[in-house]
Amino acid sequence: MTTPTPIIDRFLAFDDPWSLPESERKDLLTGAVIEAVEHHYKNNPVWRRLCEAKNFKPSDINGYDDLNRIPVISTRAFKGGFDLLSVPPEDIVKTHLSSGTSGNRSRVPRDRITLDRQSRSLWNTIRKFRVSRSGYYGMMAPSPEELGDLAIANYSKTACAMVDNYDFFLKLDGGFRPEKVVERLNSVTERPVDIGGAPMLILALAEYVLKTGQRITSFTEETGVTSGGGFKTPRGEVLDRETYNRILMQAFGVKEENIRDVYSMSELNGAMMECEHHRKHVPPYFYVSIRNPANPEEEVPFGEEGLPVFLDPLAHSYPGFIIADDIVTMETGPFDECSCGRPGATLSTAIRRAEGAEEKGCGRHVAELQDYLSGRS
Ligand SMILES: [Zn+2]
Image (cartoon, rainbow, N blue to C red; front, top):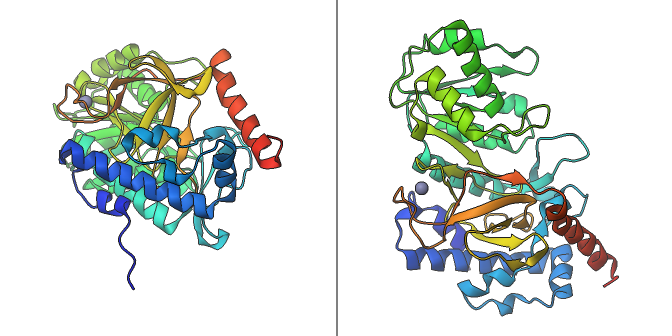
């Protein structure tokens, strides 16, 4: 007897899932999430215990409108040493770490199935959203080899696999040297020349160019700049996006519509890339819902800010039903069209960490999980 191909793998097999009719995308997403719910309920004692505490059974889901009832796990639980495995430990190929200080890092265990799905999802998304799909890519970041177990390494690898040539300019032993970057970019023969990486390093390059009066002669109209990893300075201040865009336009001569940012988290098997209108597009493989920070079970009215819930059916080795401690706003609904013409949910450019009162929801969530597991509730 052969086992049928999981719905999520059929969904991932489409090169351009955005072009599928709305009803088909909705059915594929709903079916994929239901299959994931059944798998984790059967194989993950921690998540099953959480479902039982919340009086939830997989058979409660009859369609798309019920997906909001699926119990979610705070991204903080991945930092808290919970055993979140839905597969035997020997199946884990890679435990990805989030960036950040040790002790406060997520540990996300991925098996071969999850890793392959993550690569496929990143490939489809980057191909759909990157300004260019060929030419040269200069990354203001360490190489995937140097990043090692950091979750972001797979994104870098996939982005570079798409182009003809690339370099990584942050050497963990030698730091970041803007003069070397300018020299190299000016000698590159492939076109277009795109750059990407951490916002602070991209900004450091722009400021070096402005200060010295040098030009990056290989940049053209098509040049794109893709950042990822957050807009916080090492001193903890948040870099203003408009100022960032303005400095980049001045220094590089790039168009504002080609300055893009990417949002993701180590627990998710995909990335939310900005379009030319600077909205972050949620991949069609994810269900998204924005929750009230004071009561994470409750959805906020459309357009209001809150904590994002993602149901990620690509996750096989752990339950990808996540609530994150970021504050986001949905700009386009899951079945609307963005002004760029691409369908699906989008989040606004401004995303920040939950703080103060907003944070309480996330903390309470982990405390509850501890209670459920110890049988105190
Ligand atoms: Zn868009």
